[in-house]
Length: 256
Image: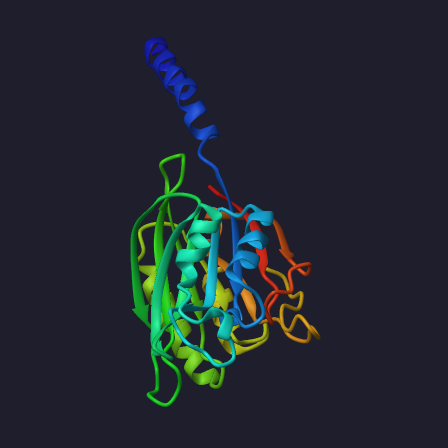
């Protein structure tokens, strides 16, 4: 009996270091770039570097378009420029063909992206095609965490609900903890956001994120699931950065 008790105590002692090191901290930023109409990629890169995030979710991200409203960005491949200037890994996901190039989403990561996928969200054929860009990231601890960036439909709450249901199904099948961030184009009390809160931990508060000229609504969010795996250490709307019509948002999470 004493021998078994000693063995159990020894095993517990050996496990304590592993258990105490089982928490990762991740700084997550989300930023709608407004297709670069108001600022250069260098200005965006400097803003990102000043916040030192581990992961950045980007919306309204162009690839070699020629927009009349953003002539300074003609031919610019946003995610390439941002990845180069920040020294982060870059991932791009096309939502639509646009103006001679592409328009969609981007992810920047301080840590290696070990797998990725772009999934088209439900669309009614009358509105802009929206997408979900997903990356599995390997943290220094060896843990894999999934980050997902999206930009939901602006004109229809019914369609946003369908898109949220679809995202929930994707996340439910995912084997790793998931962080979802982006421009949801819905205010906190919208049914689509209430649906997200039922399945996800909301990591952002209700501070207004749009517009930078006259803040009036909150439409940018960070969520995580399973909720029990995450704790929010801090959250901030980064009001000092006015390079877009959206303020960037940043939260620091622990993953248990």
